[in-house]
Image (cartoon, rainbow, N blue to C red; front, side, top):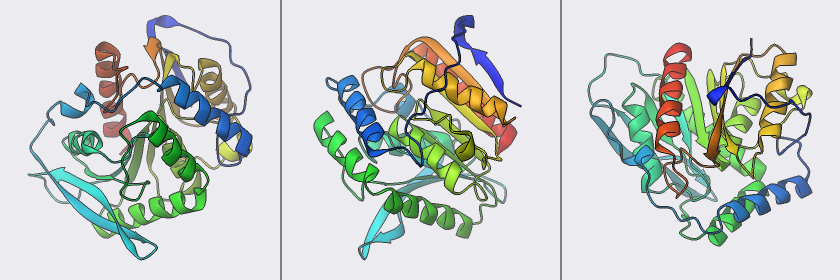
Length: 285
């Protein structure tokens, strides 16, 4: 059952409006990219407290090659608790549009500190952006290579399974949030929990019908890229389908308010969202 919970009690009207998803048109994807660039035009990938907050317990992190693209190794960041008893459930961590940088590696370690085998994937095949224009170009290239990105994620799932993970969750921010939903839609038999931080969502019930895992959606009230009406349209569609969605709208925050890097960080909202994220993972993964 969908649980709609609103930060500060805000309630907006549900509107049916399709946004970027598995079957979104190129023009819709380009509009989302243009909005993302406009939103992040003056942004830069500086580490936020989301990334540099110490994990809840000691962890180790190391680079691992989990797939090949054009016969070249794709290297992710694998983190796990130093001390653990037996099996660890897996968590795929998908970077924002800057790429798999040190901030995402640290965020991956922080998530591992909650008791997971966390793999920060690299959808840019080793490239990292320092400027918004470069990030937009990389994001556009990924959008235009949906099959390649999904194959990358499939290999990440297989890698965690080979490491012994029998349950796997996925989490991502911004662009990574959209890819978190894409992962859940395309690999619903392998994903046991999905977390979307203000990523592009859809209200297409035919697409959403395949979701059979709990989903956590965290959105920003002052979001130009994924406006609240789009987020609520997604929530409405999930409710119609009787899907398991836990939904939060943080009314007075900007897009990217809880990113591992960026300049829109909102400490109070990010701390609350982190608590909701870890509680959701504990219940469902």
